[in-house]
Length: 94
Image 1 (cartoon, rainbow, N blue to C red):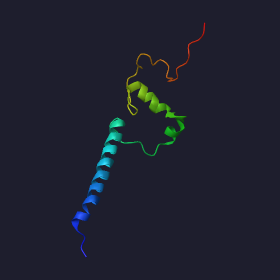
Image 2 (image 1 turned 45 degrees about the vertical axis):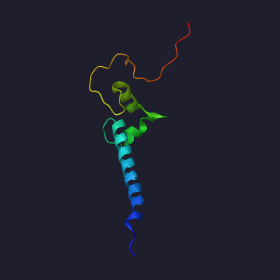
Image 3 (image 1 turned 90 degrees about the vertical axis):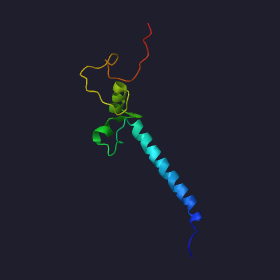
Image 4 (image 1 turned 135 degrees about the vertical axis):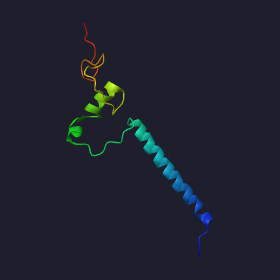
């Protein structure tokens, strides 16, 4: 007994919506990642440089370039980057 094609239209719509959502999320992740592929199989260096919430090296790159995966090849650090420490300390009481 054949299945009327009208019964398959909702499944086609659902499949198209899943495809559009997956493509949209993939493009968003690619855009947020500095137009680079997502990181997979982090090596031991990346794993050991993880402290608490964030990654030290990736946070340093974000502070240098403004992008999480951005890298900079300049020999001199920009102004205000004399100490490579993201922590802000309180001012001493006089």
